[in-house]
Length: 199
Image 1: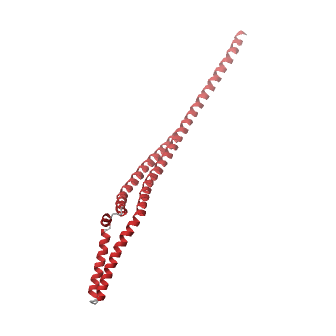
Image 2 (image 1 turned 90 degrees about the vertical axis):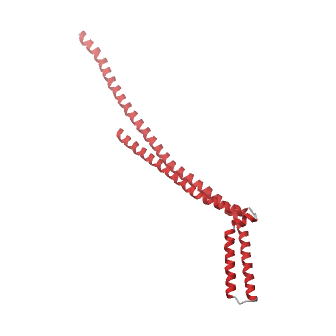
């Protein structure tokens, strides 16, 4: 009986140790994922913060790559017009329209970037917060499993202790009963012996 309880406790202890190890691994993995994701969130946050500033020079610097692509497309369109459109008023009109289209795209880009920067920042804040909560939740869940195993182990140990104490108490009770019987028998035999001697 004692060996069975000991075996159960050893198995429970091993399970607890494995769950604690798994909890540590999950916690470390969650932290690594958070550390890998955080730089990207910071870069995006800095970008949208510059757009949300409303400062023309800061916005122009942030939008420079996109503005450059618009300028390249406009230049390519004008080069195609020069190469293929007949010289004269038609060609000049097409060139002007290409410039107007490019300027309109650049203006729309700045306006849309400013207006979309605020919801983008709110989304980033929610995403990074959710990432942190996720890491904590995973760690709590893992350590919670280990805690349950520890509780089960404690219950096993308590049950084993109570069983051992009950068994020992039973032995003491049996010994006391046997001792009482012996003493009672001895006390009853003494008057009988004395009576026999008197006769």
